[in-house]
Length: 109
Length: 124
Image (cartoon, rainbow over all chains, first blue to last red; front, side, top):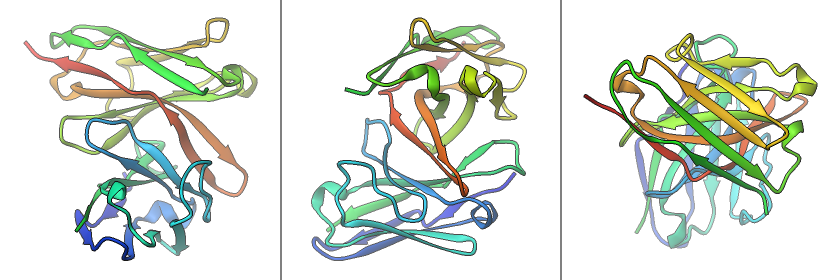
């Protein structure tokens, strides 16, 4: 089945910008959605489609897509943004209708 | 307030069964496609399966690892969705989340909101 690959971990200084990437063949035909998960909590949707934020998600979260790569950018990173981030996309070719990325742990220094 | 609350998790033996429930409130449940996602301890998220709304046919789809063992159903009169898990394996251990599967034209899909999850442990 298809996979979505993410860097395992990134660190960012408080107030700086961090970009998280997600690569996979399924992104050629489907936009990614992005989820933030803090320890012991359920995932929370932070971005979907071309660059859509749900109500309540700060505008420091933005997204972009190019061919088989989706990116989530946090501009002016805050301490509360420290979390695991997962991408997701539809995958009509694999054994899971939807596939999640491997996850990226964002540490705010 | 839009809310999903899972229940029914617990300890089961390999080969055993468990039934998870998810209670929905605060939105038009009958119009939504409902999905289960799981997370093994210390691992990432895995899509388990979904059930479409009756308007969209009420059909189900499952991930290959659970197909033939798990069954998703819904009761729109009670705003409930269920995950019947049979022939459980140790690798089914994890937190199971209920969420809604949303989409708009032009290849955009997402899951929102999510319940708090319920823990399933399969062990002898």
